[in-house]
Image (cartoon, rainbow, N blue to C red; front, side):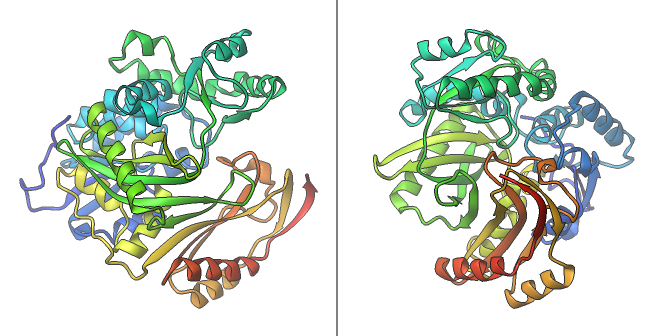
Length: 444
């Protein structure tokens, strides 16, 4: 744990809070946080370098971020970020250098290095994780090694460090594995090289050191009702403060909606909070936000821990603001300033809220028309509190979109609030019917 350069009770001036990849959307959200009037939010690293890209020159990014911070002529009170790799892994390096607060690099990697994470999870919640093994995608005998580890078709494979769902594959037969391995061999270097730069700066056990960023994970297929426990650790105290449901389109793996608050039975939510606390305490994660993804298999009444993320979910910012009163970026900023988070509960304008993914299930296509600004403004007026963020432009080929799953393309994100879940779903259906996109050269 590092010590803040200027503690929250040491001065009455503005706090200088640097945000890696600060964009206009997040600047507006941050301005609505409690105590925001005393914070000067400053950007470090251009947003284009961390959003909508699959190229991560992390060594150069850390160096340039350091130069920007060194050149700043005033006190640096906090350095924060809300993105997954590479931002999440940059933060411990920058915070240590500039004496601001965050969790240690090693505790962060126990969450983000998927093999190391499963090893430490197994030590405390072994009954709640799937069978797993690491393998080298460049090993021609990898499939045999996976079988010898007790994993049989179907199973799932992904890089040791992945970004979103990129390079993740369900393997149902040998042909699937052969196809996936070809893609992994071609593309994994864009992740492994920057991730290994981070690993080289950490104290890592030999067992984990041998499984670097060029390796992959094979895991037993798990599923059920998916949700995310959002929380933080402050001075060793784990505090889960909200559970968000991740609802999918019927018969496919694509997300339809993030729904808050969760509709899971309270006993299941309580168990997930208990498991979350046990794992984060065991890891030694401290003074930072997290979210932990779970499945509840209702048929077998079994909970599975899917993965741990070392940040808040940006997708959940607006729905927390609608239900609780502010974005849970409040948690990140308060922790970085050395405070116990001032996160309200159920003080928002809506009892429920959701982020919807407006999708098309094409192999590929060219977008020939998107909704106009006037059309979007009309919809937002008719459904108060709604935010619509288009992900495509006219003339764009869908296959150029980044961070997409294997089954569909997300054309727009829609955040809405409502009095209850039924009204939320009905309102979204009405809105979605009026979002007019057109396409040419449709394939699949």
